[in-house]
Length: 331
Image 1 (cartoon, rainbow, N blue to C red):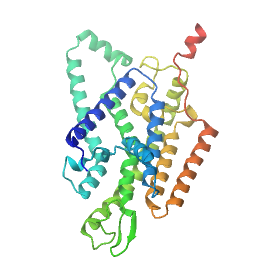
Image 2 (spheres, helix red, strand yellow):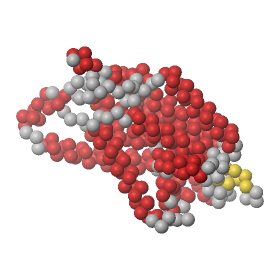
Image 3 (cartoon, rainbow, N blue to C red):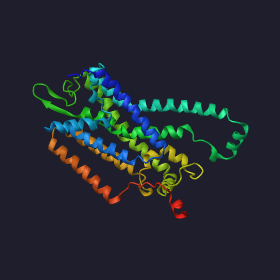
Image 4 (tube, rainbow, N blue to C red):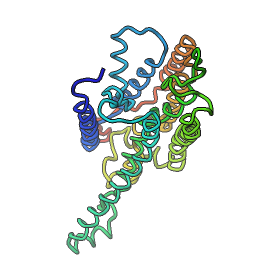
């Protein structure tokens, strides 16, 4: 049944979302280590996957799964159908368009920040402009460095969502008298006779290839091409140093790409790709083995156990330094 205040819940969801983004921006500005928050979101996304298993879960666990599914940008918890009339196809396209929407919003933010920076620069005195032209360490960061950092972070967190959205078109079950239908929408048959399935299936394949493989490939290319500057910057971070353009020649790299590697030790700056691989394996298992819940759960636990072993063997996460080692040695 629709809740009495469905539209209020729908509006409140986006208010809370923007508030959380604002808090994350403020914490990042204060240079507070958000590695714990990143680990927490990854954990919640993994736990939320268990609600897809065809078990008779206790109502308390179902409520817990629904709550943590908010980490997957799951708007179903606020019953959007009670506020907005939309079809399964529309929901599929909206979720599949999240990376595109994030790209457009990032571009708008980049244009706005560039205009603001240009106007502020034109108002500076001639002496200050001359000083900036001589000493580049005094120059402010380019807007693209900050915008790209936020974009890559959001792209990482929506990866699990868009990947599952593409894989649901392969999750079909046999039903008596009907044939094979989608588990997520039993009114849609899993064959070419259904016009909705025929329309969405090619887009599902494109989503898996473009997002499921394309996003990790993009991250791998960035980490590979900038591996030297990234490692040197992370060595400075491990000593609690390099928090300004004056003390860090790789400060622009930090602001642009730090969301991909800042949580890890210098020798494990590519560990984010391992986490993406775990998400891909969990999403694939949750969707493709829906007809075999015990095997599905066993495989998921095996994936998480292997991840735990790798984690304990390598311990890739970087311990934060509140004070630089050079300062402590001087003291």
